[in-house]
Structures are given as C-alpha cells and as structure tokens.
Image (cartoon, rainbow, N blue to C red; front, side):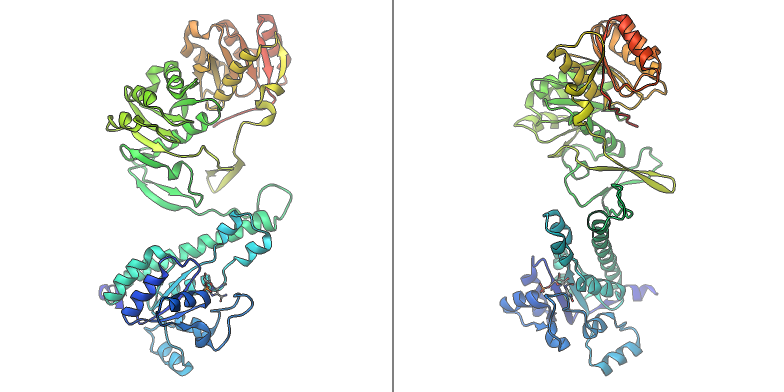
Length: 523
Ligand SMILES: NC(=O)c1ncn([C@@H]2O[C@H](COP(=O)(O)O)[C@@H](O)[C@H]2O)c1NC=O
C-alpha cells in the first residue's frame, strides 16, 4: 500500500450503533446526526437515541426481522453483516451490495454485555451465560477486519475522536487500523474472560484446582526506562482487577523503575503479614529491617535500626497510613520508594521535601490468589503463599523441646516467624522487641544463613533474641550457630529426617524450640 493510500480518509455517512454502556450516547448521536450521518441502531440504544430527539432507524426495520429470543438475535443478519463486511475498495463487492439492496456502514460503535462484571457480582451461572455477548463481538470483529472500509469504536472514551473525525472528513487508514487493533484486543480480552470462567468455574475438567485453560490479559500501562538492567527494555502492564501495586497512585517523585516495582512488591508482601502497625524496608527483594510498633513511626524507627547501612536507598512499605512523624523520619534517610494505604495530614508534604523519593498510595494489601512464574517455554502457577491458620498460628505449634514460652515471649517468636517469611530462602531471622535484628538471606546452605543473621545482629542483639528458620534444619550445625550466639528460642517447621538430632542439640543448649509444621520457602 502506498503512503497516499495510508493517509486516505473515508467519510462517515452511515453508522451502526449498538451499545450496552450508554455513557455519552446522546452527545454522540446528536453530533453524528448534525454532521449528516444516518444512524441505525438496536432496541434500547435506538430508544435512547430517539428519546434524545435524534432520527434513528431500528435494525429491525433494516432487516425486516424482529429482534427475538430475549435479544439473543438482533443484529445477526446478512443485511447488517454484509453492510459491515463489504470491502468497498472492490468493484465486485460494491456491485453485490447494490444487487442485494444492502447499504454499507462506514462506522460501527459497539460495546459489549458486561460479562466480567456479572460474574464478579456473584450472579447465577445462567445469568452469567446470558451476559455472553454474541452479536456485539461479531459486529466488532467484522468491522475491525474490514478496517479499510469501516471505522470501529468500542469505548465511549473514543466518542470525542469520532465526532472530531466526522467533521474532518472521516478517519484516515492509519487511525482505522489502530481502532481495529483496539477492537480485536477488546474482543480477545472478552473471550479470554469467558473461556477462563468456563474452564475454572462453569465446566472444570478434572478435580485438580487448576483449569486446563489459563487465560489472562494485561494492558500496557507505561513504558519503563529500562528493566532489571539498563540494556533490558521493559514496560508495566496492568490486569483488569485494578487495585494492586501496578495500579497504585504515585503522589510524588521520579518515575518508578522496574526494580522499584519488584522491591515494592516484596515490601508490601512483608508489611501486610502483620496485624499491628508494621514497616518493612526492602533492598533487592530482601528485608533489611522489618518491625511492628505501637504506631508506624515507632515501627519505622525499629525497622531502620535493624541495619541502617543497608536501609540506605531502601524501599519502604507500611500497612497503615503514614503519620507526619514517620514521614519526617523517612525524609531524613535516602529512600527510593514508600508505599502505604494512605498519608495523614502533613505526611506527604514532609516526604515531598525530598525531590526523588517516590511516594505511592495503594489502598489495599496484596490479594492476588495465584502466582505465575515464566519459565523457558511455559509458566508455573501456584496458589499464593500466605500465612495459614494451621502452622502459622502459635496456638497450633508443637513444643519440640525446652520451657514453654510465656504469651509475651510467644508473641516475640511469632513475630520472628512471620517476618522470616519475607526473607529469600534459605532464611534465618533473629528478632527482639518486635523487630528484626539480624537477617540471613538467600544463602545456599542454612549454616551460612545462620552465620549471616548472627553477624548482622552483632553479639549483643543476638543474645536473648528469638530466631526463625523458613524451613527445617537438615543437620544440627545451623542451629548450633544460633545456640552459640545465645538465642532464647527457635521456631522452625520441623520435618527433617534428622529432627531428633536437631532437637537434641537444642535440648543440650537449654533453649526452647517450636515446630510449626508449615514451611515458607521464598525464592
Ligand atoms: N444478539 C445480537 O444480535 C446482538 N447484537 C448486538 N448485541 C448487543 O446488544 C447490546 C445493545 O442492545 P440494546 O441496544 O438493546 O441495548 C450491545 O451490547 C450489543 O453488543 C447483541 N446481543 C447479544 O448477543
């Protein structure tokens, strides 16, 4: 196709309008009519247009066939589809339309039945099925295929463009192609939603919890400066749910980077594990401090004190609104990102004194029920790891050896256990007074993780601390490092074939050890 043909505009003389969402419909109809466009429309869409005093032809008048079967058949008729699908560049198609008495459409405006919203509302299966639009996608796909002759619009957000184009001699080919691409994205996402619902809720094929078809669609929200490294192009995509980190509102600061997003994701995961006001400070997806407090300012001081060296340039997540006091503390420290459900009076102003800090507001904690990880040639899907009623509640722990802890001591050990879940495996975390004091993360053996946790805590803080291990000790050696450092109690899943040896070492040292029966690997 030549450059001239690319820029060809096609005047809009006849439009087919069939919309479930009637937003902006009257203005659109009026504008089209004033520009001399003839309108053809379905049942209630035609009703609304006529009520606005705009002349409109009902589809039934065009087809000579009544809308029937409760709206299941309205536009599914050759007089409609031939009018959309005729390639007007071809003499033969133009000739055939004439012989058949079919007039072509230049514009198709359709939006679909709200299938996803109906499912989300908890409607019955029959009601959901009834909301699967058949005629709408057929028209959208037909018009998008035939974009050399027809412009297609699927969202009220595009109506202003339509009215501008109508006054300006129509859409050019490049724009019709873009609209067609949008239209196919729209119907593809719609069908993925239908197919996913069928596969997982309506007609699951086997007893496993996993559907045989996994459909998901994302839309590009923004292009990022680069990915994990500067030579990796990257972009942010959002899903339709609309309430996670990807949709967080940025209140201040520089553009978020790829690494900012991954660290912020890890930070939120950590902070929202705790019921009390909690602050997690993350670097490279690992906590360099995590603490609970009477309020967020105290939690932040305690989290920062864990490892002030590493907290430089960290990412902070809070599970409560940020107070002015906390914001003033944070503004003293070089921080890449802070994310919270909200900001109290004066907090944002205090943070905004720092030009570069990115301030995000994300109203809810992480809620995604499943996690997907791309691997070469495929993807792994798992139910998201969360704290469990069994295993993560100290009431269900088993005392493996030593004195039972008091309620206050058990709360300390429970904090260590939850905080340890935020640490990349192999993870050992030492805690005191509701704050991490030493974190050993990401080592390929548990002994080194224990050594790292103890070294980071320092002798004084390790003494009398509460230790958690994300998985069992395969040998007593890792535990022995903690014993030597003087920890008061240890919590771990248990379940090693050598549990007896590990328990024996704890017993010999006179410390308390609890088994959770639950493991929290995090990779
Ligand atoms: N069955 C059909 O022939 C048909 N043609 C158009 N629709 C849909 O009916 C709706 C508009 O209907 P109304 O104008 O009656 O509100 C649109 O969402 C459109 O996508 C249809 N409905 C469902 O398939």
